[in-house]
Image (cartoon, rainbow, N blue to C red; front, side, top):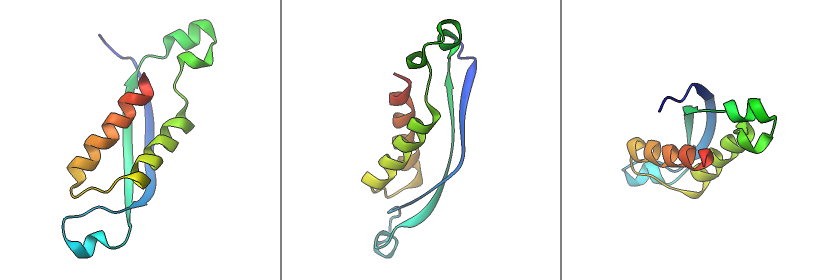
Length: 91
């Protein structure tokens, strides 16, 4: 199944605890997030019914909330957590 539409989040800046060493985990650090969410919003275009779309603001707030609520040791684990947020927003 092809997903023709893309929701793009560029340069979302958050502060969060991320890192392996104890000195990295003392204070929140700046993290910049770029996300591309592949989706299909054609139903929203056909029906003009907003619940069939994805609200960009809600996606951004969910990404920010996830970063505020979690601490990661690696950027790879953070990326996986953010990917799950993006998938959740789609459904």
